[in-house]
Structures are given as C-alpha cells and as structure tokens.
Image (tube, rainbow, N blue to C red):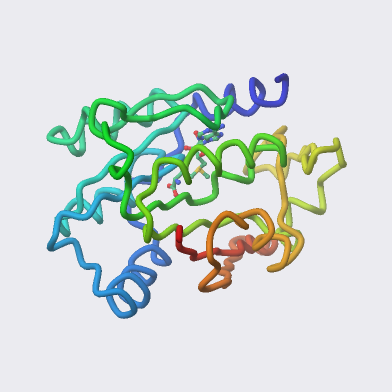
Length: 232
Ligand SMILES: C[S@@+](CC[C@H](N)C(=O)[O-])C[C@H]1O[C@@H](n2cnc3c(N)ncnc32)[C@H](O)[C@@H]1O
C-alpha cells in the first residue's frame, strides 16, 4: 500500500514525545482507577499501539503495570528500550500493514485466555485507512482478555489539518501544507463525530465518548475524539 509507505517514511524521523500526556494520567485517575479500581497494583498489562518513545507506557510502568507496545518507528522503539530496559523485550517494531490474525507477543501470551488487560492507542489510528484501521482493531481485539478496556484517541474533522486535506477514498485524506513550522505531506483519516467513532469500535461495548483539544501559535484546533470501551 503506497500510503502506508509514505506515512512510514515520515515516522522514521524522530517524534520527540518523552512524557506522559495529560489526558492519559487523567484517564487513569478518572476512569481506570475511579470506575474500575485498576491502579497497577495487580501488575495488570497495558498495551500501546503506536507507542512512539513510550512516554505514556513509562507512566504505567512506574505505577506497576506490565507494559507492552509496538510501533513502526524503529528509532522511537530503541529510545523506549533505553528508558525502560527491563521491558525491552516487550517493545517491538511492526510492519505498517495491519494483519487481523497477527499476534504481537506470542512468546508472552500462549493460551486463548491470555491477553492484554488495558489497551491504549493515542493519535495513531488517524494514519490508517478505514480498511486497515478495521484490520488493526480486529488484531488488537483478538489479543485482549474478556473484560479488558481500550482507550483510543482519533483526530476529529474539526482539526485544522482538515483545512489542508483532499479526499483520497477509504477514509483517507491527503494532508499537505507548510506553515513555516511543519512541512507535512501525510495520509490522514478523520473521525466525523462520536457516532462515527463508535461505529469504528463496534467490536467493543462503548462506555465513554469524549474529546480533547489544544491550539498553539494560533495554528488551529488539534481536536481529537476519544473512545473508552470494553471487550465483552
Ligand atoms: C502522533 S504519534 C503518537 C505517538 C504516541 N502514541 C504518543 O502519544 O506519544 C503517532 C504514532 O503512530 C505510529 N504509527 C503510524 N502508522 C502506524 C501503523 N501503521 N502501525 C503502528 N503505528 C503507526 C507512528 O510511528 C507514531 O509513533
């Protein structure tokens, strides 16, 4: 797939994101801990799809969670391994092409009852077409325990990138612009609204559909929808 190669090339550069994002520690306190009593004390597993340098995973690691993650960016996975050397075997470089039947860590999860307790994926699904994001969601779903929780963020149509986007089909848009700070030529998938997001994650029982937003240098809204759901 040509678009996957283009996005892959982009992500082979470094994406400097060393720290936990505020919406992750807020989600932890407000949902995982408050609603479900999940706090890491039982060594619950957390898997991050598109983990980058592992800033979010390191937060969970320090709380006692057993952390796993994958990304297409080799440089970033190497940095995560240095930050959490004791978990280096649990971070992997994967192919950009999702495969529904792929098992990311067959060496750790052998029986059908095994699987992740928590899954997070922050600002990663936006880089996949509708067809490929469905494959990735199925792949992740297959590797979660019954009752496991998932928290995902996905770019909304009101994000300013949409002002620079031309439709390509299968949910993808060509996002091309240079604002002096960034020079982008990416293939991007925007979520229309909460119903659209719920539909994308229809394998899961939806619990909370929320959002976060920010703007810097008056460049425009960086709006993302979030989905919190359960594998029943
Ligand atoms: C905006 S960054 C977010 C990184 C990290 N989740 C965070 O919050 O710091 C998007 C990440 O998605 C990864 N990515 C892009 N396409 C991917 C794919 N097809 N499969 C897995 N990861 C992908 C990139 O390499 C990058 O690390």
